[in-house]
Image (tube, rainbow, N blue to C red; front, top):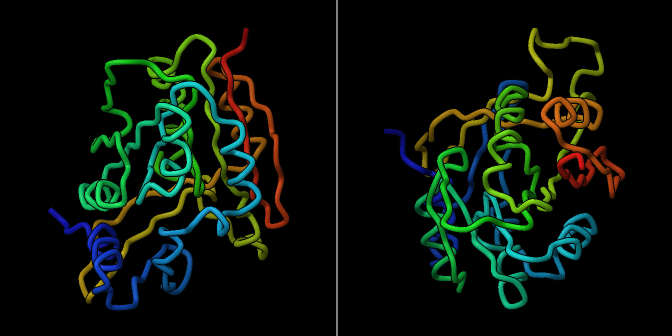
Length: 230
């Protein structure tokens, strides 16, 4: 089993032992350095999109891919909030940072004892699904996690600009492969999905979800609210 180098970097940063850099390799260009401090942002550091997303949250909330609990920490004093993450070390970091309700699990295998009103998926929330088909499967599964009038608040980006010369891959261009490297150790390669608005809206409609684009940024990022068709 590959080591969770992402989670190790988070633990080291929290303990003041971080040894830069945390690198992220990809399948479209050169490796890039990932600024670990972005995972430990304070409320004043959040983007306009994130602040708006948090304002839309209500009821019982599931924070998917919660990482270090940046968003959960801002929500849990007002709403019952569960922070879900597949990284065991990230869950340990959340606990040390004061997150109250933490679940270490893969989203598609999570079977909660209660349903939620809001599913929050930020920092390119579609990413963890990896592929368009997995995103479609998730939307079907999500109906088991949400109350009757529940909704998904999710952000993503259109990364077509990476292929300005028209050198598209033979699969959907928003399906990226990444791999973290920390202290000269490589983590497991993983798929990450960026999805354009039209594709998200189309796929959601195919499985019974209405899409409302509620925020658009200046760098092709956007925020969507998905709700089942009434």
